[in-house]
Image (cartoon, rainbow, N blue to C red):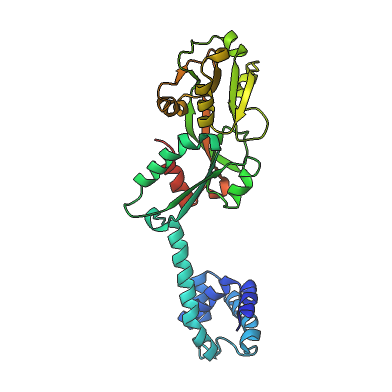
Length: 317
């Protein structure tokens, strides 16, 4: 058979028929094969007839029975004897593949994992994720972790179709197709130029602010919380990365009252520490709920061994 015929045959072939074929070949009896498969004898006979009808036109054996009667049992035809080793090998290979899928061994089976996250939080989250992944793998294993930009509009479809394994995002509206676990809860703080005095609510409202978002428009994540409190701040700059925002705050200094950056304290610490004294953190002059990030996956991956292992490893203990 050529490749086109192979594909057409496989498209129509019912794998259950091969299980029946293998059982009859081993038992040399329709009755014993039926008992093994928990089927009726007529169902076994019908399955063999269907298999012959599907294979016959491709093998030129339309009228040749696979198992002619032989005394009280059946005997394999020449075609059945030729097919039997290949059928058993194929069924065994399929069984091994299914067993391996459940017997997940990350050092052996994990080749690549794709995680989507907002670009702005990648520096705060990805290094720790990579460190946790490496701690749980044997030395010398080399899986690839890909961090890709999160597109909230396509996140659900991308997770469902396997374009990515997991996604990191703020708390989203409930969706029956998405599952999530808490990943990080971070209190808000202010980042300001060194020497900036603590800010009260009036000063916060009057100051110029930097908003960080990878989206072209719409509120930054902290603005949703502020708007729920009835507060709308004055945005002087909108940019895509917190590193950029911190440099702008440092270079603006205290001129004109300086600029303020509202962000998570956990994320701010390495940026402030690396500013060589140009930046400080200040308390936020209002009560805001913590910035919460979650690890999302599609419900279709609930029981996938690789996805489950990744969730367990990448989530902080």
